[in-house]
Length: 109
Image 1: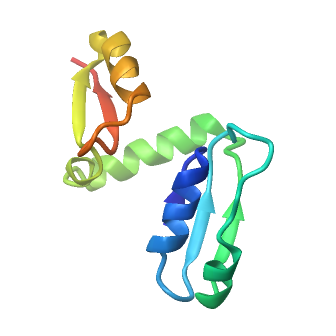
Image 2: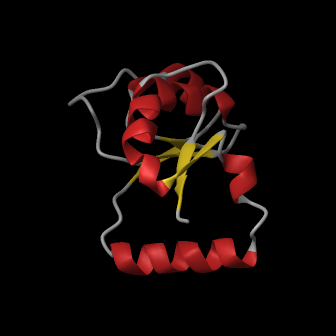
């Protein structure tokens, strides 16, 4: 499971993880300290990892190549797609959580 920078997503990732699984927390934290469901993580024997991407260009190129090989994947990850020119609207929508809204993407052309 993967958790973004909000405290609740880390808690949700621990809840969703299978016993023996790994939770990877990424993104710049919004707060200096986060509450963490330690007992649940302990009982599930989870591994929790954090990290940052230091070689962004290589990581983006690798991700683009992976998506090119598996073109069906993006449809499973995004609940909303907006044209790149609607970036302001996309940001406004992404800033307000709504039922059924999970992840947005900007599409070029």
